[in-house]
Image (cartoon, rainbow, N blue to C red; front, side):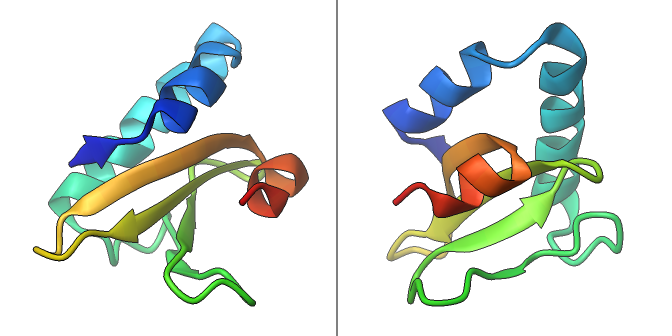
Length: 85
């Protein structure tokens, strides 16, 4: 799993409890992207961007590279995270 700089920046801005939830979701992503709690799906209007849930409000956006590996793009609260490019 790879990370873009934007992911690191958004992760650092989160409170410690939210960071812990994001870490847990990333572990689930690495094990099984289809895990029911993640509810992973494509982001509407964005051809190569996907998102998943860390909890009711926290989201992680990601994409797949040419080898099929997950590249983490962004994380944070629902609306601001899903609206970022």
